[in-house]
Length: 199
Image (cartoon, rainbow, N blue to C red; front, side, top):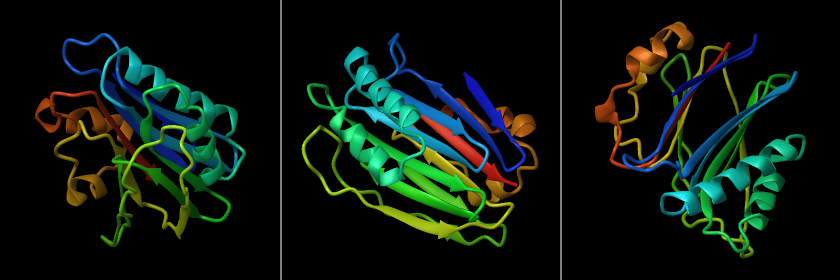
């Protein structure tokens, strides 16, 4: 199922589906829209099924409830929420429209890549491991963005992310996202793919 989010600064499209045969999706995503910023996150609960879904959903609730905190503090609280749960990996990005910067925070194998209009690629290396409630070092990174940049967040169920050429050619995610998605991009797993275009 495709979800669309849009305001004057950003357009976001997301697709999420459970592993074939499962009712529960172990992945989750959230887009939190405020006047001066938008938060985008993809979370993958460990394993699949109900236990994975419980962990992913717990992290999403923490993100929504703590939207005004710094991103590394939000992820720290997500980690605390994993006590007595399976655990999760996640990437959280905050797009600050006032400062025209992206603040990135990650723990585990959720991919993030951002392409600027001139083709410059920003792709931070993910931190190994997962959030389990144990004390871990969580850090964020900041980088400026140019209008017209496009970014992608994706769980490990996405085996073939979109190419730079295809992403930068997108005029409107609302019109074009559904045509870009093909099933052969996805592994036999829970899948979440989120694409954002900065205006």
